[in-house]
Amino acid sequence: MVVVKHKEISTLGFALLGLIETQPSTGYELRRVFRETPMGRYSSSPGAIYPALHTLESQKHIRARHGVGRTGRCTQTWHVTAAGRKRLTRWLQQDVTVDELFQAPDVVLLRFSYLDLLDDLDWSEQFLRQFHDAACACSQRVATIRESLKSVQPPHGQLALASGEQAFVAHATWAKWALVNIRERQEQRTR
Amino acid sequence: MVVVKHKEISTLGFALLGLIETQPSTGYELRRVFRETPMGRYSSSPGAIYPALHTLESQKHIRARHGVGRTGRCTQTWHVTAAGRKRLTRWLQQDVTVDELFQAPDVVLLRFSYLDLLDDLDWSEQFLRQFHDAACACSQRVATIRESLKSVQPPHGQLALASGEQAFVAHATWAKWALVNIRERQEQRTR
DNA sequence: CCAACCATGTAAGCTGTTACATGATTGA
DNA sequence: TCAATCATGTAACAGCTTACATGGTTGG
Image (cartoon, rainbow over all chains, first blue to last red):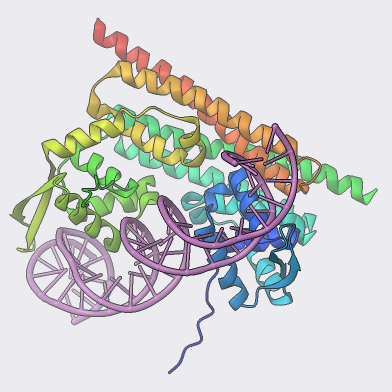
Protein backbone atom coordinates (compact mmCIF):
# COMPACT_ATOMS: atom_id res chain seq x y z
CA MET A 1 0.00 0.00 0.00
CA VAL A 2 1.36 3.34 -0.98
CA VAL A 3 0.71 6.04 1.54
CA VAL A 4 0.99 9.55 0.20
CA LYS A 5 2.60 11.37 3.05
CA HIS A 6 1.35 14.88 3.65
CA LYS A 7 4.93 15.89 4.08
CA GLU A 8 5.32 18.29 6.92
CA ILE A 9 6.92 21.68 6.80
CA SER A 10 9.73 22.43 9.23
CA THR A 11 9.85 25.52 11.41
CA LEU A 12 12.37 27.02 9.03
CA GLY A 13 9.97 26.25 6.19
CA PHE A 14 7.15 28.14 7.87
CA ALA A 15 9.46 31.02 8.71
CA LEU A 16 10.34 31.27 5.02
CA LEU A 17 6.77 30.83 3.86
CA GLY A 18 5.61 33.66 6.09
CA LEU A 19 8.35 35.99 4.96
CA ILE A 20 7.65 35.26 1.30
CA GLU A 21 3.93 35.79 1.76
CA THR A 22 4.62 39.11 3.44
CA GLN A 23 6.92 40.08 0.62
CA PRO A 24 8.06 37.99 -2.36
CA SER A 25 11.84 37.71 -2.15
CA THR A 26 14.94 36.00 -3.44
CA GLY A 27 16.88 33.49 -1.38
CA TYR A 28 19.55 36.06 -0.82
CA GLU A 29 17.14 38.61 0.58
CA LEU A 30 15.66 35.99 2.89
CA ARG A 31 19.11 35.08 4.17
CA ARG A 32 19.70 38.70 5.06
CA VAL A 33 16.56 38.79 7.17
CA PHE A 34 17.77 35.74 9.06
CA ARG A 35 21.19 37.27 9.59
CA GLU A 36 19.92 40.61 10.78
CA THR A 37 16.94 39.78 12.94
CA PRO A 38 16.20 37.38 15.81
CA MET A 39 14.74 35.06 13.15
CA GLY A 40 18.33 33.88 12.91
CA ARG A 41 17.38 31.31 15.52
CA TYR A 42 15.50 29.33 12.91
CA SER A 43 18.71 28.92 11.03
CA SER A 44 20.95 30.99 8.96
CA SER A 45 23.14 29.75 6.25
CA PRO A 46 22.73 28.90 2.59
CA GLY A 47 23.11 25.22 3.32
CA ALA A 48 19.81 25.32 5.14
CA ILE A 49 17.83 27.99 3.34
CA TYR A 50 18.30 27.04 -0.30
CA PRO A 51 17.41 23.38 0.22
CA ALA A 52 14.40 24.43 2.33
CA LEU A 53 13.22 26.70 -0.49
CA HIS A 54 13.55 23.88 -3.01
CA THR A 55 11.60 21.58 -0.72
CA LEU A 56 8.82 24.15 -0.46
CA GLU A 57 8.89 24.45 -4.24
CA SER A 58 8.62 20.70 -4.76
CA GLN A 59 5.65 20.75 -2.40
CA LYS A 60 4.10 23.45 -4.62
CA HIS A 61 3.89 25.86 -1.73
CA ILE A 62 6.00 28.47 -3.48
CA ARG A 63 6.85 29.23 -7.10
CA ALA A 64 9.75 31.13 -8.63
CA ARG A 65 9.51 34.07 -10.94
CA HIS A 66 12.75 34.43 -12.86
CA GLY A 67 14.54 37.68 -13.35
CA VAL A 68 17.97 39.14 -13.65
CA GLY A 69 19.87 40.50 -10.68
CA ARG A 70 22.12 43.50 -10.71
CA THR A 71 25.14 41.35 -11.42
CA GLY A 72 23.47 40.11 -14.57
CA ARG A 73 22.95 36.78 -12.95
CA CYS A 74 19.70 34.82 -13.11
CA THR A 75 17.65 35.32 -9.93
CA GLN A 76 14.57 33.66 -8.55
CA THR A 77 11.96 35.65 -6.74
CA TRP A 78 9.74 33.37 -4.72
CA HIS A 79 5.97 33.75 -4.44
CA VAL A 80 3.51 31.81 -2.33
CA THR A 81 1.01 29.71 -4.28
CA ALA A 82 -2.64 29.27 -3.39
CA ALA A 83 -1.82 25.90 -1.81
CA GLY A 84 1.01 27.46 0.17
CA ARG A 85 -1.26 30.22 1.40
CA LYS A 86 -3.79 27.65 2.52
CA ARG A 87 -1.17 25.66 4.42
CA LEU A 88 0.22 28.81 6.03
CA THR A 89 -3.25 29.93 7.07
CA ARG A 90 -3.94 26.58 8.67
CA TRP A 91 -0.70 26.86 10.60
CA LEU A 92 -1.49 30.38 11.76
CA GLN A 93 -4.88 29.28 13.01
CA GLN A 94 -3.47 26.62 15.28
CA ASP A 95 -4.44 26.95 18.91
CA VAL A 96 -1.76 27.77 21.46
CA THR A 97 -1.34 24.72 23.65
CA VAL A 98 0.46 24.53 26.96
CA ASP A 99 2.72 21.76 25.68
CA GLU A 100 3.83 23.65 22.62
CA LEU A 101 4.53 26.83 24.54
CA PHE A 102 6.44 24.83 27.12
CA GLN A 103 8.61 23.07 24.57
CA ALA A 104 9.01 25.75 21.91
CA PRO A 105 7.87 29.25 22.85
CA ASP A 106 9.85 30.70 19.94
CA VAL A 107 7.76 28.85 17.40
CA VAL A 108 4.54 30.13 18.96
CA LEU A 109 5.88 33.67 18.77
CA LEU A 110 6.91 33.14 15.18
CA ARG A 111 3.33 32.23 14.41
CA PHE A 112 2.11 35.31 16.20
CA SER A 113 4.47 37.54 14.28
CA TYR A 114 2.77 36.51 11.03
CA LEU A 115 -0.83 37.04 12.19
CA ASP A 116 -1.04 40.24 10.18
CA LEU A 117 -1.43 38.00 7.16
CA LEU A 118 -4.78 36.72 8.41
CA ASP A 119 -6.13 40.21 8.92
CA ASP A 120 -8.42 38.89 11.63
CA LEU A 121 -8.09 40.85 14.84
CA ASP A 122 -10.61 38.64 16.61
CA TRP A 123 -8.34 35.67 16.14
CA SER A 124 -5.34 37.72 17.22
CA GLU A 125 -7.13 38.52 20.46
CA GLN A 126 -8.09 34.94 21.01
CA PHE A 127 -4.55 33.85 20.26
CA LEU A 128 -3.22 36.22 22.90
CA ARG A 129 -5.74 35.06 25.47
CA GLN A 130 -4.71 31.46 24.82
CA PHE A 131 -1.09 32.52 24.96
CA HIS A 132 -1.58 34.24 28.28
CA ASP A 133 -3.32 31.30 29.87
CA ALA A 134 -0.80 28.83 28.52
CA ALA A 135 2.10 30.94 29.78
CA CYS A 136 0.57 31.00 33.27
CA ALA A 137 0.14 27.24 33.13
CA CYS A 138 3.75 26.79 32.02
CA SER A 139 4.99 28.95 34.85
CA GLN A 140 2.91 26.88 37.25
CA ARG A 141 4.30 23.70 35.78
CA VAL A 142 7.88 24.82 36.32
CA ALA A 143 7.01 25.96 39.85
CA THR A 144 5.63 22.52 40.63
CA ILE A 145 8.75 20.83 39.32
CA ARG A 146 10.93 23.18 41.29
CA GLU A 147 8.97 22.50 44.44
CA SER A 148 9.24 18.76 43.96
CA LEU A 149 13.00 18.94 43.48
CA LYS A 150 13.63 21.34 46.35
CA SER A 151 15.22 18.73 48.58
CA VAL A 152 17.22 16.93 45.88
CA GLN A 153 18.47 19.69 43.66
CA PRO A 154 21.47 21.93 44.31
CA PRO A 155 20.87 25.69 44.61
CA HIS A 156 21.99 26.77 41.13
CA GLY A 157 19.60 24.31 39.59
CA GLN A 158 16.82 25.79 41.68
CA LEU A 159 17.72 29.27 40.51
CA ALA A 160 17.76 28.16 36.89
CA LEU A 161 14.27 26.74 37.27
CA ALA A 162 13.18 30.00 38.85
CA SER A 163 14.44 31.74 35.74
CA GLY A 164 12.20 29.53 33.63
CA GLU A 165 9.26 30.37 35.84
CA GLN A 166 9.88 34.09 35.58
CA ALA A 167 10.35 33.90 31.84
CA PHE A 168 6.86 32.44 31.46
CA VAL A 169 5.44 35.10 33.77
CA ALA A 170 7.06 37.71 31.54
CA HIS A 171 5.46 36.06 28.53
CA ALA A 172 2.06 36.23 30.20
CA THR A 173 2.58 39.88 31.02
CA TRP A 174 3.55 40.60 27.45
CA ALA A 175 0.41 38.85 26.17
CA LYS A 176 -1.82 41.05 28.32
CA TRP A 177 -0.04 44.15 27.15
CA ALA A 178 -0.21 43.10 23.51
CA LEU A 179 -3.91 42.36 23.91
CA VAL A 180 -4.58 45.93 24.99
CA ASN A 181 -2.47 47.13 22.08
CA ILE A 182 -4.50 45.07 19.62
CA ARG A 183 -7.83 46.17 21.11
CA GLU A 184 -6.93 49.79 20.66
CA ARG A 185 -6.27 49.14 17.01
CA GLN A 186 -9.57 47.26 16.81
CA GLU A 187 -11.42 50.26 18.17
CA GLN A 188 -9.72 52.68 15.85
CA ARG A 189 -10.88 50.53 13.00
CA THR A 190 -14.49 50.32 14.12
CA ARG A 191 -14.71 54.05 14.31
CA MET B 1 48.06 14.92 7.13
CA VAL B 2 45.98 13.42 9.86
CA VAL B 3 44.42 15.96 12.11
CA VAL B 4 43.22 14.64 15.43
CA LYS B 5 40.04 16.54 15.95
CA HIS B 6 39.23 17.56 19.48
CA LYS B 7 35.74 16.38 18.86
CA GLU B 8 33.20 18.71 20.29
CA ILE B 9 30.46 17.82 22.72
CA SER B 10 26.90 18.72 21.81
CA THR B 11 24.55 20.55 24.13
CA LEU B 12 22.83 17.29 24.89
CA GLY B 13 26.24 15.84 25.69
CA PHE B 14 26.97 18.56 28.23
CA ALA B 15 23.51 18.23 29.72
CA LEU B 16 24.19 14.53 30.27
CA LEU B 17 27.71 15.09 31.53
CA GLY B 18 26.49 17.55 34.14
CA LEU B 19 23.72 15.28 35.31
CA ILE B 20 26.08 12.33 35.63
CA GLU B 21 28.64 14.38 37.51
CA THR B 22 25.93 15.54 39.90
CA GLN B 23 24.81 11.96 40.36
CA PRO B 24 26.04 8.83 38.56
CA SER B 25 23.07 7.34 36.76
CA THR B 26 21.86 4.83 34.22
CA GLY B 27 20.56 5.86 30.81
CA TYR B 28 17.06 5.13 31.95
CA GLU B 29 17.30 7.41 34.94
CA LEU B 30 18.70 10.18 32.76
CA ARG B 31 15.84 9.79 30.33
CA ARG B 32 13.40 10.26 33.17
CA VAL B 33 15.01 13.55 34.12
CA PHE B 34 14.60 14.75 30.56
CA ARG B 35 11.00 13.68 30.46
CA GLU B 36 10.04 15.25 33.75
CA THR B 37 11.93 18.54 33.81
CA PRO B 38 12.40 21.45 31.43
CA MET B 39 15.67 19.77 30.41
CA GLY B 40 13.43 17.98 27.96
CA ARG B 41 14.27 20.78 25.56
CA TYR B 42 17.70 19.33 24.99
CA SER B 43 16.07 16.21 23.72
CA SER B 44 14.21 13.34 25.06
CA SER B 45 14.12 9.96 23.55
CA PRO B 46 16.32 6.89 23.62
CA GLY B 47 17.37 7.43 20.03
CA ALA B 48 19.21 10.54 21.11
CA ILE B 49 20.34 9.77 24.64
CA TYR B 50 21.87 6.31 24.26
CA PRO B 51 23.98 7.25 21.24
CA ALA B 52 25.07 10.44 23.01
CA LEU B 53 26.16 8.41 26.03
CA HIS B 54 28.17 6.06 23.83
CA THR B 55 29.81 9.01 22.14
CA LEU B 56 30.79 10.43 25.51
CA GLU B 57 32.14 7.01 26.43
CA SER B 58 34.22 6.74 23.27
CA GLN B 59 35.63 10.17 24.07
CA LYS B 60 36.57 8.81 27.53
CA HIS B 61 34.48 11.45 29.25
CA ILE B 62 32.36 8.91 31.07
CA ARG B 63 32.80 5.28 32.08
CA ALA B 64 30.28 2.59 32.90
CA ARG B 65 30.11 0.57 36.04
CA HIS B 66 28.15 -2.60 35.42
CA GLY B 67 25.48 -3.88 37.71
CA VAL B 68 22.22 -5.74 37.70
CA GLY B 69 18.89 -3.93 37.61
CA ARG B 70 15.78 -5.01 39.41
CA THR B 71 14.64 -6.99 36.41
CA GLY B 72 17.81 -9.03 36.52
CA ARG B 73 19.03 -7.29 33.44
CA CYS B 74 22.53 -5.95 33.03
CA THR B 75 22.65 -2.20 33.72
CA GLN B 76 25.28 0.47 33.20
CA THR B 77 25.75 3.23 35.71
CA TRP B 78 27.69 6.07 34.18
CA HIS B 79 30.44 7.96 35.99
CA VAL B 80 32.40 10.98 34.86
CA THR B 81 36.13 10.39 34.34
CA ALA B 82 38.89 12.82 35.25
CA ALA B 83 39.08 13.92 31.61
CA GLY B 84 35.33 14.41 31.49
CA ARG B 85 35.41 16.47 34.64
CA LYS B 86 38.11 18.65 33.17
CA ARG B 87 36.13 19.23 29.98
CA LEU B 88 32.98 19.97 31.95
CA THR B 89 34.82 22.44 34.15
CA ARG B 90 36.22 24.24 31.12
CA TRP B 91 32.72 24.54 29.72
CA LEU B 92 31.31 25.85 33.00
CA GLN B 93 34.01 28.50 33.15
CA GLN B 94 33.14 29.94 29.77
CA ASP B 95 32.28 33.60 29.80
CA VAL B 96 28.75 34.69 29.00
CA THR B 97 28.88 36.51 25.69
CA VAL B 98 26.19 38.68 24.18
CA ASP B 99 26.13 36.57 21.03
CA GLU B 100 25.65 33.29 22.83
CA LEU B 101 22.89 34.67 25.04
CA PHE B 102 21.20 36.17 22.02
CA GLN B 103 21.28 32.94 20.03
CA ALA B 104 20.84 30.35 22.75
CA PRO B 105 19.83 31.61 26.18
CA ASP B 106 18.78 28.12 27.20
CA VAL B 107 22.30 26.80 26.86
CA VAL B 108 23.68 29.60 29.02
CA LEU B 109 21.11 28.79 31.68
CA LEU B 110 21.99 25.11 31.44
CA ARG B 111 25.56 26.03 32.22
CA PHE B 112 24.44 28.13 35.15
CA SER B 113 22.34 25.32 36.54
CA TYR B 114 25.48 23.20 36.91
CA LEU B 115 27.65 25.81 38.61
CA ASP B 116 27.22 24.05 41.95
CA LEU B 117 29.75 21.56 40.64
CA LEU B 118 32.49 24.19 40.62
CA ASP B 119 31.83 25.19 44.20
CA ASP B 120 33.13 28.65 43.44
CA LEU B 121 30.68 31.35 44.49
CA ASP B 122 32.97 34.09 43.20
CA TRP B 123 32.67 32.70 39.70
CA SER B 124 28.92 32.30 40.13
CA GLU B 125 28.68 35.98 40.98
CA GLN B 126 30.81 36.98 38.05
CA PHE B 127 28.76 34.74 35.78
CA LEU B 128 25.59 36.48 36.89
CA ARG B 129 27.07 39.92 36.40
CA GLN B 130 28.12 38.95 32.88
CA PHE B 131 24.68 37.44 32.32
CA HIS B 132 22.96 40.61 33.47
CA ASP B 133 25.03 42.86 31.25
CA ALA B 134 24.67 40.56 28.26
CA ALA B 135 20.89 40.37 28.75
CA CYS B 136 20.68 44.16 28.80
CA ALA B 137 22.75 44.31 25.62
CA CYS B 138 20.51 41.71 23.96
CA SER B 139 17.41 43.66 24.88
CA GLN B 140 19.02 46.76 23.41
CA ARG B 141 19.92 44.89 20.27
CA VAL B 142 16.34 43.76 19.73
CA ALA B 143 15.11 47.28 20.45
CA THR B 144 17.42 48.65 17.79
CA ILE B 145 16.22 46.12 15.25
CA ARG B 146 12.61 46.89 16.12
CA GLU B 147 13.21 50.58 15.72
CA SER B 148 14.87 50.10 12.35
CA LEU B 149 11.96 48.01 11.08
CA LYS B 150 9.23 50.27 12.44
CA SER B 151 8.23 51.60 9.07
CA VAL B 152 8.53 48.33 7.15
CA GLN B 153 7.19 45.74 9.50
CA PRO B 154 3.53 44.94 10.17
CA PRO B 155 2.22 45.41 13.73
CA HIS B 156 2.25 41.77 14.87
CA GLY B 157 5.89 41.49 13.92
CA GLN B 158 6.60 44.57 16.01
CA LEU B 159 4.80 43.07 18.97
CA ALA B 160 6.73 39.82 18.61
CA LEU B 161 10.01 41.73 18.68
CA ALA B 162 8.78 43.57 21.76
CA SER B 163 8.26 40.20 23.37
CA GLY B 164 11.89 39.34 22.70
CA GLU B 165 12.97 42.62 24.23
CA GLN B 166 10.91 42.04 27.34
CA ALA B 167 12.15 38.49 27.68
CA PHE B 168 15.74 39.73 27.87
CA VAL B 169 14.75 42.38 30.39
CA ALA B 170 13.19 39.62 32.48
CA HIS B 171 16.43 37.66 32.21
CA ALA B 172 18.40 40.66 33.42
CA THR B 173 16.01 41.11 36.34
CA TRP B 174 16.38 37.46 37.24
CA ALA B 175 20.18 37.75 37.18
CA LYS B 176 20.11 40.62 39.64
CA TRP B 177 17.79 38.74 41.91
CA ALA B 178 19.87 35.57 41.72
CA LEU B 179 23.00 37.57 42.50
CA VAL B 180 21.50 38.78 45.77
CA ASN B 181 20.47 35.23 46.51
CA ILE B 182 24.00 33.95 45.95
CA ARG B 183 25.55 36.74 47.99
CA GLU B 184 23.41 35.86 50.96
CA ARG B 185 24.65 32.32 50.76
CA GLN B 186 28.21 33.64 50.46
CA GLU B 187 27.81 35.61 53.68
CA GLN B 188 26.31 32.72 55.56
CA ARG B 189 29.33 30.72 54.62
CA THR B 190 31.88 33.30 55.70
CA ARG B 191 30.31 33.51 59.11
C1' DC C 1 -3.91 -11.13 32.96
C1' DC C 2 -2.79 -6.77 31.37
C1' DA C 3 -0.83 -2.33 31.73
C1' DA C 4 2.84 0.15 33.25
C1' DC C 5 7.40 0.40 34.37
C1' DC C 6 12.40 -1.08 34.30
C1' DA C 7 16.32 -1.04 30.95
C1' DT C 8 18.67 -1.00 26.67
C1' DG C 9 19.19 -0.45 22.26
C1' DT C 10 18.90 -0.08 16.53
C1' DA C 11 17.54 1.77 11.80
C1' DA C 12 15.71 4.95 8.42
C1' DG C 13 15.23 9.31 7.32
C1' DC C 14 15.26 14.26 7.65
C1' DT C 15 17.34 18.59 8.80
C1' DG C 16 20.86 21.50 9.79
C1' DT C 17 25.95 22.86 10.07
C1' DT C 18 30.33 23.94 8.11
C1' DA C 19 32.94 24.67 4.48
C1' DC C 20 33.68 25.10 -0.13
C1' DA C 21 32.72 26.77 -5.13
C1' DT C 22 31.51 30.26 -8.59
C1' DG C 23 31.48 34.69 -10.54
C1' DA C 24 29.98 39.44 -11.46
C1' DT C 25 29.77 44.34 -9.66
C1' DT C 26 30.45 48.34 -6.74
C1' DG C 27 32.85 51.46 -3.73
C1' DA C 28 37.12 52.93 -1.19
C1' DT D 1 43.04 46.56 -6.80
C1' DC D 2 40.95 44.62 -3.14
C1' DA D 3 37.26 43.86 -0.12
C1' DA D 4 32.51 43.64 0.27
C1' DT D 5 28.16 42.67 -1.62
C1' DC D 6 24.99 40.42 -4.83
C1' DA D 7 23.31 35.63 -5.84
C1' DT D 8 23.13 30.73 -5.95
C1' DG D 9 24.35 26.56 -4.87
C1' DT D 10 26.80 21.60 -3.38
C1' DA D 11 29.05 17.98 -0.38
C1' DA D 12 30.32 15.77 3.84
C1' DC D 13 29.04 15.11 8.08
C1' DA D 14 26.70 15.38 12.64
C1' DG D 15 22.60 15.10 15.19
C1' DC D 16 17.94 14.35 16.32
C1' DT D 17 13.14 12.24 15.62
C1' DT D 18 10.18 8.49 15.07
C1' DA D 19 9.39 4.07 15.30
C1' DC D 20 10.54 -0.40 16.24
C1' DA D 21 12.59 -4.43 19.00
C1' DT D 22 13.36 -7.05 23.27
C1' DG D 23 12.15 -8.91 27.57
C1' DG D 24 11.67 -9.18 32.59
C1' DT D 25 8.84 -7.48 36.84
C1' DT D 26 5.33 -5.32 39.66
C1' DG D 27 0.69 -3.75 40.88
C1' DG D 28 -4.27 -3.54 40.27
